[in-house]
Length: 192
Image (cartoon, rainbow, N blue to C red; front, side):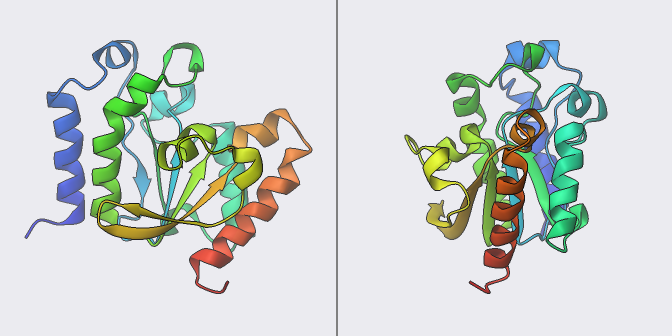
């Protein structure tokens, strides 16, 4: 029986061997799979690695990551309690939004990550990751509201949140994001 870590390593190897998004891979420093607890009850899914993430090989380590850590702390959590990944595993040039084809190319691998971890809650960070699970939905209407979705054969609670970068660029979003995040943490503990 293989461990979750071994299965995640195999998945990473498959992405490399199958030349997923070769154009992105060619200009990126490295593949950024994810980071955290493979037995986590909560998985965070962002959009794509940025400059710092590409350099360090870890998701959410730049300014958005510092704010994410602050939100985790406000909810009584730390990064080692959760698993953090992105839809797209390579940094898009100039931090542009990931394209539909790039997101689509990585979908099977993201779903496999979720299958390996088997979280109870998925928290999407930003509209790109939310739209992955709720096509056509508007984050302005659904942010902070738990949604029951199926990922493969597993039913999970998904809570869409604004991307932490939104609070960095728009100070009025900061409290909205913190409040939504605290509520999502309560939902993940089954208290709501």
